[in-house]
Length: 507
Image (cartoon, rainbow, N blue to C red; front, side, top):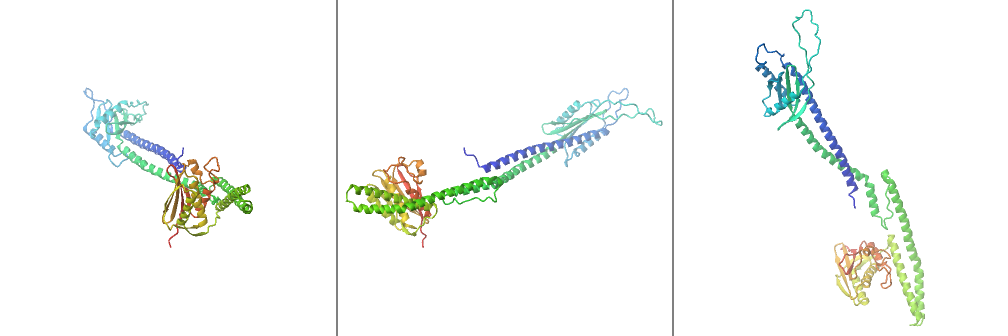
């Protein structure tokens, strides 16, 4: 299974790690900020509950014989209403904060309750419930203080009793969320509810900032990780580029180490050493092939000459003449192999010399057609090319390429088969395609058909002459002309080779 890009995975992993960190940090920060705001609100609530103490008048016992306890008069109610209004602007916001207030006397009679909010009934119910759950203040325990000598003994200052520290809770109504605190005093009970609307709005603003900033930060992290990983993988890309250029003419490529990261130095050193060994081995092999071909050329030429002279001296039609003829054919075949090996060694070394002249490809194709008619009169030949197809090239080498292609088209053709010759000309290139009827070439053979000494026939018998050097040499000649030779994809029952050559520029 092919994995995604390593660089992409680094960028995505970095973004995922940074994203989880930022989301976790944002969530923790949001809750910390929210808790800090609630704590500050609780402190203000506690302060206002303590400030409510002076608003309570001293507790008076009802007169003897009175039927009802003391009730809050209109002046006290106005004082509580003013106190409620002051609370609305006392909780750290520039706007009026919805506040609800409930005040009870020691006998749980309602002295004051808010009636200006649409949800007062529901909020007042929550305040009364909270007051019911709030414990009573502790009873006073004190020794009677010594009275001054000039003090009236009948006067006694009431003890100052502070309520138990209130516990604040958050309650939800149908329309809002409230923070409620309650305290009980000796002579009264008070409960305050503050709407968390302002706090929720501030937290919503902070949440929106996080929702915008975190994706932006993740994008910056991903882009930064992509750029950083690209810089880190630059030696790998450089190594890949050099590997792609490693051909018989590019074994001298080396990767410089001076500006490479330490982590890649050993890898690049090993690769450079491998190229050095390959270059040395290939140079030795190419030199051996060229030297062997060159050294065998002279003895084969002498042997061929001696056989030809001896063949002329023997009796015509004798058995000796037949044997000498067979030997001469083999010597000529060896001479052809030596010439091909010599050309291939020169091509490998990039030293194949071309005698460039203007070559009329139309004329060469007509000469090849005449040879086909003599060598294979049973084959049907179809042509589709025009006159005046001229290229700049080595005439003898191009003839060798065409001879090889037509020879293969004849040798590997079917009985009573056919050959087609087509040309296609553009402003810059000339395409010569030779198609013949044949058996289908297996995919494994198609990939190796240009390999040296490779033949599709596994038995390598002599029914079809050749040693597997013709196509390899033909392609090297085409590439030496800045062209190419390719095996085309065709339908079943045929084989097609296309020779591509650069066209002459019009004068």
